[in-house]
Length: 151
View 1 (cartoon, rainbow, N blue to C red):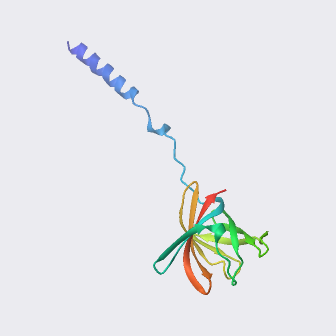
View 2: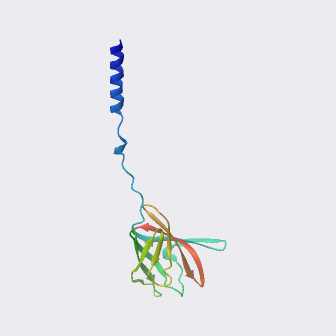
View 3: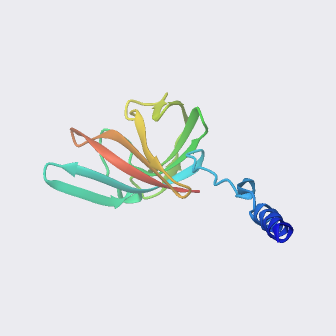
């Protein structure tokens, strides 16, 4: 009887140890990255009690800066480049010269015109990037949040 119980325990232990699979085979989920090429989507802002949202391409014209209707933003771990498309008064468009910058933690600094203010990376996923920065329009400076889609 003791041999029978010992055999059953031995076989049970052997089956128990071999039936469990290793956790090492679980695929590692790749973390989302802000690196890549992004194109503007929407712009959000607050002015007093008013909250506004519109497509970036519908940003109203202003005399103090070009009317930018699209930004293509390319980000690496430490660098950024920005290519803007300007809408001209005659309705045609013109691509402006590329502006380069650096990324330190979540802060993007561009070496461009005075309206290329520092931008803060607020959030990102595989398909969406959200930046916050100040724009000056019609004599007032206000913070905006701009969303981008992966290109």
